[in-house]
Image (tube, rainbow, N blue to C red; front, top):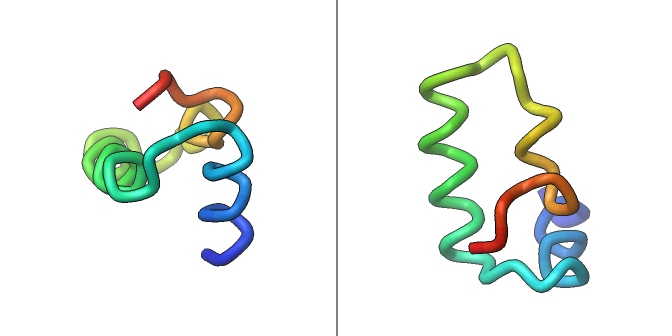
Length: 44
């Protein structure tokens, strides 16, 4: 979790919004997580 948050910071994501986005998207598509990585996620 720490690495994910730090990587999100390094990629310019707003941490609270990014984590909320990830959790919402994981509920929709739990098997497809590649697009949720900070460098693939839409800018939040």
